[in-house]
Length: 363
Image 1 (cartoon, rainbow, N blue to C red):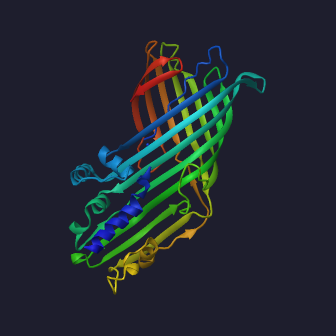
Image 2 (image 1 turned 90 degrees about the vertical axis):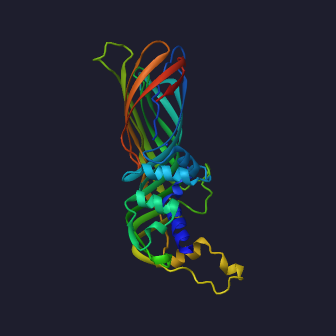
Image 3 (image 1 turned 30 degrees about the horizontal axis):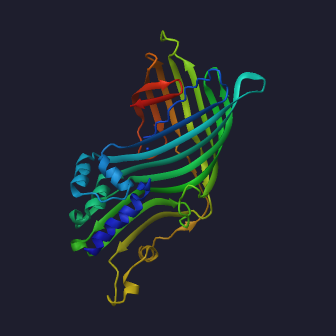
């Protein structure tokens, strides 16, 4: 009935709204200064993945498209325990000058701009089923929907650092502009659906944070400020009989953003009971259509506006690689992203080099 559908919509809004936006794999830069000492490096990466949810369902959520029942059911059948999912977009542009620094001939100035869009989701199987199939199957039952969490951060960085030409190692300190934040963490969440869906009782402990809801979350939005550190260290693999074998240690986006005072925050440890909404006159259209404020008031859920500081979803990465020949290189990667919905990643890559400056890879 109406109550059942409302519960489903509410769970979609609170637990899956972050899907408006990858496991991120930031490519290491292999510089070849050749005869030119000024250099521009451009990197981009996009990934979307999940340990259970079908790709077509993930993309449907991201693009706000209709998802058929068969696709939803296939994903439900694959969930074993907690479901994990994520999508990341990364773009980096760096300019390295020819001028030396601090009388070190191998040190160059490094200017860097970067854009990031991180999304990570961790959800309970029952939460997925109630969201995509409703609560009818859980009639007269108490269902545990926790732990579940989702976080989305979009931000840009503008930084200055030092690039070591001889080892292709570098360090950059950046100013961070916060574009958008959505965060929800359900530490405890149980829902009881009464017979025939006449009422819903919920016991919830969790946190919800949303950057300035009055903004349109476009690229130009400035909803917070912070700092971030990026470090990349490359060394030869001496135990391998190859002059091109290297190992790279890298940390990206290690920092924080202080989201401004218009940030909405709700920290709840409460019980809620919803028995529907009484409409005295169904022909009174002004009172028939309910807005977000009316629903939140009915449930007793309120938000506080205040400054909130959040760590950035940083990436720690180790990559070993070697040139197989003039056209191909092989890479082994171990990576960790500090974000809900991500497990440590171990993978392999192969790159085809079109020129000393251009390559395409498959992992």
